[in-house]
Length: 99
Image (cartoon, rainbow, N blue to C red; front, side, top):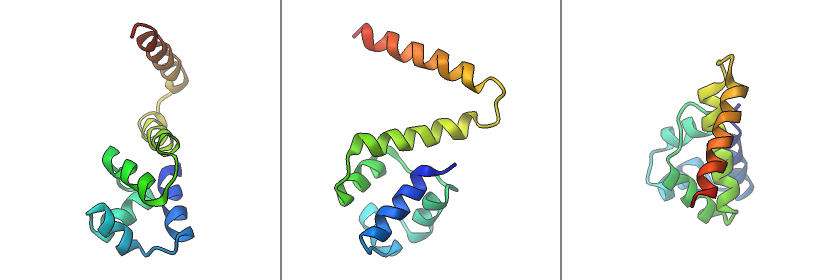
């Protein structure tokens, strides 16, 4: 699963933007962006926000997809992934309530 990278590629292609042009806007080289699109490298949070700005898409949607991809990559081979996600969800909910 690399839905984040696929989304970036789709946005770039929909806007007829060459890989090197988007890479330049992100201040990275084309090889790095290509790896992000293929799921071989993770984008940084600030890059995700900049991509959202460049393509005028909802930053929360793009951040959610980016985070989901990160979580998936961490848990994909774990037998207790579902349990871990449930515990994490409870912790996040608890933290938000205590604010």
